[in-house]
Image (cartoon, rainbow, N blue to C red):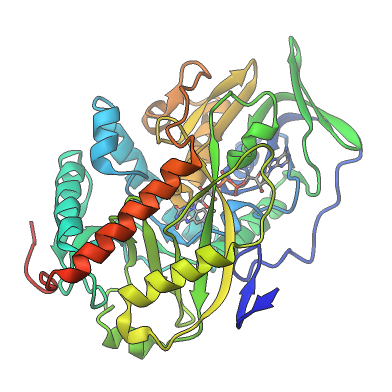
Length: 447
Ligand SMILES: Cc1cc2nc3c(=O)[nH]c(=O)nc-3n(C[C@H](O)[C@H](O)[C@H](O)COP(=O)(O)OP(=O)(O)OC[C@H]3O[C@@H](n4cnc5c(N)ncnc54)[C@H](O)[C@@H]3O)c2cc1C
């Protein structure tokens, strides 16, 4: 739907549903491993298991990649999701392992893009945890210190040193990673999956998952599947399957917007010479990245909590308008640039603020919950889980996230009011920072 020159859609990017949509599963089938969910996690799991010689069936309720995997902002980040200070406090003993997992994930996914020859406009620019105020610059410096101490390859610097647009004062560059077109990445993974021995059924929602002493039965609307083992790769949608661990994920709806074409020269003229992706240090982050087609994609800033069964939504006009206000504040010299497309998707938050993997019930495994950093982490975690199911000793990065029991504490993201308050505090801080004279951009902050 188009409104005020903006087209609003649930799906992002150029990832229009593939023309070769696969038929639903009808009747009865058996296999070694059934993977439920065809996002990055499920596709990577199935692909690796097929490469390792397993007989795999993947069930996807829409088409492969139709969830968060084709709707995200495209920033392939190597840092853990969430505030590093909070994470290092919540997980003091595991923090180093978590940081290692994040960097391993970015390197793995970069390698996967290359190995599978996926043309998804990947630019290995790194991403910057960037500051728009003096307060955020202090926070970024602290975060850089915490991450470096845990072994991360990050560099703190001023805005000009890091090649950031005017208006961003500096921040920490995560050197590993970069950005890409997520829809093209999802469709590329889908192409590789279809070329493998995996039997893929789209338009096939799994209804029930029933383990017994000999294996697992999965029911679908017009048939059933018998598997030795099952992998739940349903991420933010996991609550709809009764077998998923209770409280494992809280779905939150996030928006993204793409501008009209701006042109590479103009982006360079505003100082964005590094083309690195940007994530601000707000409570509810703002993300910005340049695209290969000379536009900017930006988003988040507000999150809406999902209740009950999660369904697609139309992007919220008020949230999109707020995002556009934020874009014009951060890029004052681009006030003439209008938004063109807006979309949204479900992000899966977890109680420990980390991705999680484990065994939900006998022979039923799960990998999910990337808290907004699944672009690198989901393909990696899915692959590590597949290797474990294929008989390998668990990789140390899988061990860092493995849950001995499928039990989860109540989520910290439990109330719409908390999310609204986070947004309000961010806007107040923005207003206060505007009253202070700008400084810092271009000064040397190298550590
Ligand atoms: C707006 C937005 C911006 C984001 N930005 C970034 C970013 O810049 N960088 C980053 O790293 N991450 C980002 N993310 C997060 C990232 O997209 C996800 O972490 C990642 O795509 C998760 O992949 P997944 O396969 O686990 O989940 P999904 O892609 O959601 O896949 C789950 C799949 O399971 C299917 N399914 C669900 N239930 C069933 C069932 N019962 N039967 C069969 N199939 C089922 C769904 O249809 C879906 O296709 C963003 C997410 C959103 C929504």
